[in-house]
Image 1 (cartoon, helix red, strand yellow):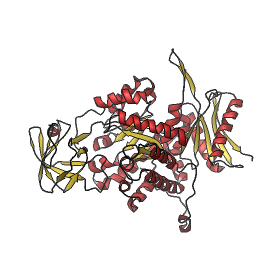
Image 2 (image 1 turned 30 degrees about the vertical axis):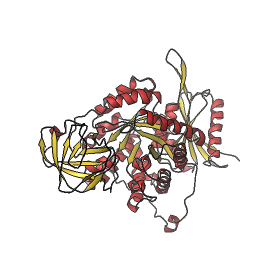
Image 3 (image 1 turned 90 degrees about the vertical axis):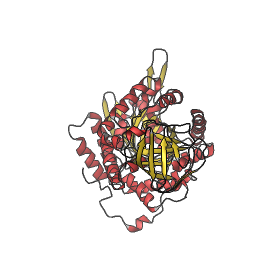
Image 4 (image 1 turned 90 degrees about the horizontal axis):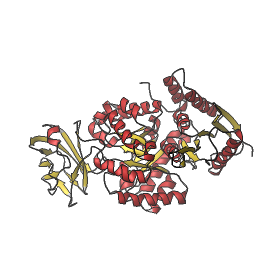
Length: 527
């Protein structure tokens, strides 16, 4: 792999570091995915999250029933209307997740060097001596000396609410463990993770299928986050399942890489998936801590070259309870951006954290600062070299549009697209200016009725770095006469002016199809 040093070539002036950050309409090019839950499901808080920069809302079905999530989603829809900020919806599956069931919800205290038994008998009451789990096959999967981690659901890194266990012996279906650190487990649900052990649970469970075919279909979800993706086959099966569910054939599948098994098959998974989520919380347990950074850099580089969005999780754990991130976390967010991340995913920080809106705002500010020093020139050269020659028609148009925009210091690139592919390819070359993708709806029929498609395509660009969608009036086809394109362009430019990205005398690069040809043109704006 090439060196991934993506800071600016010229040294950074120390004085420039102290200049105040400029506020702008697009808080950052990097996107923020927020998980909505108990602390972030009211209309007010969701509106605050959207204003602060959240562009994808994640609904995590590991907990809460579909009715609970539906109420949250209704509030999200209302917030989108009032704030006029677009937001995509992501359904996160439970997948092959082992859980400790604590029906009474009483806190369980575990003492170092004591013994605790993991049992598949879910009817039992959880206590300091026995923890009932939702998987009968654990005894067959582990052996003496294996490490098992039990933590609060969406555990955060430095908590005293998670415990390491070492398998001492297996007795029938029970697993007897030594406790390695003292901790108190609080809540109704804990995640259980066996380090580097293959767990024979399906990636898409029956419960997941039910959630997708009811809640997912009803709400036309934009993204499916496929938890515990371990093989390319997992993605193919999920795709096959979605293809039979009407509109959901357009839902994008993001493979969530959470363990060594997924990491081993990363290349094949990337080929099949529409995007990747690096679940660093679980990976941090499965991998030795000193290896995590290397996997992040390698995986993000591969996603970037494939032109598929990459999402990094678990960045500001400490903001679950604090108003400021730690120094290490602030640096980590910036490095995720410099490594090539498209989006940052917040879990516990927004789900049950005390400061959901402030967290989104601070993460956005850190991303914006990191973007200023991103070495676009080096990145562009690397991408062109990786793509090689001969380039495809679309790839060559996309890279030319970005090169032109940088050379003429354009303030924005406007791309007309119907499938969203052209705009995503432009974003792949990481232009330093925002890309407004004007999605032109396509008329399609299922023999019974005519409908316009385009809403999915527009919302799905909300997870791609630097891409800002705008849905055009369906009466304007994407490859029509220049007259209608001019009027759509005017709408896009007005949108740009209103949001402060475009000013008079600015230059704008426009990428569109005219007949069979693709055209890149540079426009200089009058007053």
